[in-house]
Image (cartoon, rainbow, N blue to C red; front, side, top):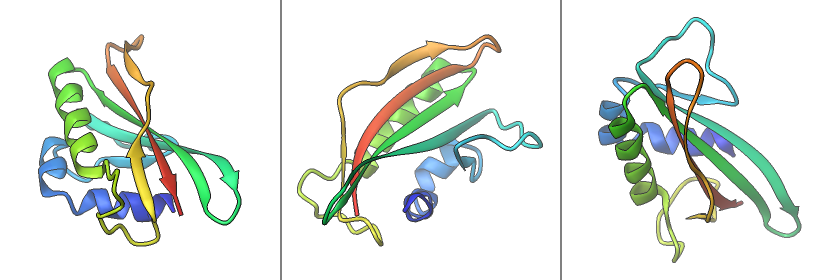
Length: 120
């Protein structure tokens, strides 16, 4: 499920250009990579009925605050699908949830957190 979402994000040329490459990771960034900006995706199962529901946490990370703001904006525009009209293989619906925010970590990175509801 997350792999289908990452595959879909990697098809977004604008996003990949903003990230300076395919810097989208699941759960944690590999130690050997040190990109200027990257996206970290985490998931949490919310419901396991006929449709499985997941809360997807997307962290946009960069030393440049403007970059994380731009990344968040592109993600919201590209993924938010209130009417279920976008086709993402294996995913029935994805929409933005309330919450999230912006913080700065000890290493000086800005982290912009965005939440999505994903149904499969």
